[in-house]
Amino acid sequence: MDLYQIFKTSNPIIGVVHLLPLPTSPGWGGSLKAVTERAEQEATALAAGGVDGIVIENFFDVPFVKDEVDPAVVSAMTLIVDRIVNLVMLPVGINVLRNDAKSAMAIATCVKAKFIRVNVLTGVMATDQGLIEGCARQLLRYRRELDSNVAILADVLVKHARPLGTPNLIAAVSDTIERGLADAVILSGWATGSPPTLEDLEIARAAAKGTPVFIGSGANTENVSKLMQAADGVIVASSLKRRGNIKETIDPIRVSHFVEVARQSFTTKSPKPRSVSSKLKL
Image (cartoon, rainbow, N blue to C red; front, side):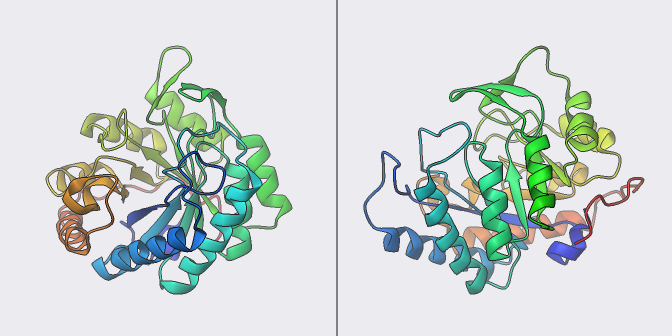
């Protein structure tokens, strides 16, 4: 994946909009207008703070289903994402939790979003939703069927989960790219708000052989400069919330500060050799 073609930078900072509970969720509040208005406010705050892209996810729909979400969730997310795509002049992505990649691809293609995040593209992960199996075969064929150019950013050994068998980061990264055909990979810590280690990022970067590697969780103003030495981009949510509380709304001041610190780190990065051509023309 050519990051510059999507984000107009080789080191994108992607902010996250956590949607309030959607229809059929236990926490659903009964007003799609309220969910949409908050999403619009958060997307505007992220754009004003200088991020390079936004990913929208049904974060508060806990407890999650492991694969296919209810059609009402797909309908609601389609309406909301369409509003955001037309509101901000930034690339927008979608993550349908826990692992409904096919719905994410459908929504993104219909509303002209640029990318999706997939928690389990390859392998089998033990999660609090049960065993989640990789969906690469179905997803890649569905993308071809839709004649879509939506990029796939895939987690490797995703947070809040454990792989069946002994975890091997090198093999997981390689399989996600070479067998799952991911356009970029994402490395997170063990849970929301927990960062990956610099060592793991360096291992993933070497195993990726030129495919972009994103930090998927836990980045903040204190650690992003260090972590970005071994990554191409960062997806950030928790540290941009007011008081750093995941349940709060986006704080524009925190966004601006994070973006400033992250961009400063780009100028000190060591160059990364590119040996793998893009799998997806965007």
